[in-house]
Every structure is written in structure tokens, then in C-alpha cells.
Length: 235
Image (cartoon, rainbow, N blue to C red; front, side):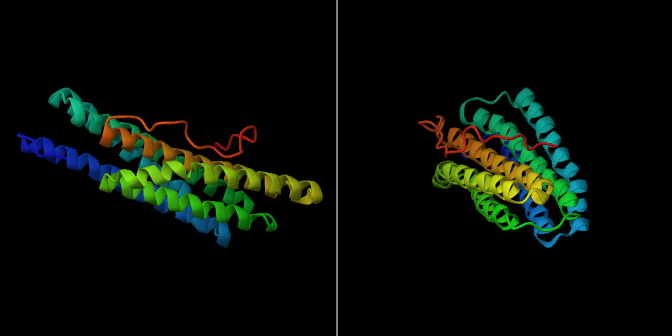
């Protein structure tokens, strides 16, 4: 980003970028902890993840307040306006990622009370892919790296295909052993939460492309074969 005549404006843009970086770091940590709580059946850690979600919400509110102030006082145009509006959008995407990580932790609290089931390893495998994608898009945001953003955008199909396979595996497992229905149902919702995190990471990639280039990514977003297998994985 080029230097502005008014130095304080550069400082404000830098402050905004720092808040987003902190939000992203917290969201990454929240997801990692939620998955660790799930894999290790650690209910204390899961409870901490749920309790910590509020901090990301507070940072999102800070971004909202700060950007409104900048828009009112600076009246930015062109690239500056894109950066400020993008910060609003990206903070919202990160906040949703934090929410989905908290949802995984909430279901881990329940799942940890049930006998372990085999498909858990497949859920964790998909989660590892989504963690990689999330890290890459957050790094791309800090570095304003368009190539990384495009790589994330193209990997959305990979997550969708993995989710579709996992969904079918869970259904098969429940049909073969009805005693696993409760545990597998929770895993199904967790898998959807994790897939949604991948979607929000892809959204951030699209916003970043617009910030850097001033244009939207061309073509339809790559999607896997998961259409029609959608379940709501909310609170």
C-alpha cells in the first residue's frame, strides 16, 4: 500500500490490519483447540474454547467501530475504500469461523461422554485440510498475496469432495450399527461446521482478490459433489 500524505491515515490502516491479524490468529487457535479437545476427549479444553469465543466477537465489533470512524473522517476512495470495506467483510468471515470452531467444541463436550466411533478419524482428517486452507488464506491476507488467495479458492472443491465422502461414510456406519447413531449424528454436524469454515476461508480469498485487483475472481467457485448433502451445523 502506498504512503499517504496524512501519516495518521497510514497508521489507522495498519491498526486495522493488526486487528484482523489478531482475529485470524485467535480463530486458528480456536479451531486447533476444538479439534484437540475432540481427538483427545478433553472436555475441559472444549469448555475453554466455547468460553473464549467472545473475544473474537469483541474484536469484530472493534473492527466495525473503527471502520465506521475511518469512513466518516477520511472519506476514502478507490483502493483505500476497498481496503476498509474489505476489513469489515473479512472480520465478519473470521467471526463466523470462530463460531463454527466453538460449535465443534460444544459438540465435543457431548461426544466425549459417548463411546468412541471409528469415523472420528475421518472427521479429523478433513479438519486438517481445512486448517491448512485457513492458515493459507490468513497468511495471504497479512501478506496481500494474491497467488495464495487463488490457491485457497481452488481448494474449496477438495473440501467439498471430502465432506461428501465423509457424509456417506457416517450414514453407512449408522445403518450398520444403530447404537452409533447419536455419536455419528454429532460427528455429522461437526463435519458440516468444519466444511463451513472452509467456505468462509474461500470467501476471504475472494475479498482479498477484490482488494488487490479491484475485480472479482472470474468463473464459478469450484464445488465438489456435495450438493444436496447439506445439513445445518449451527448452534
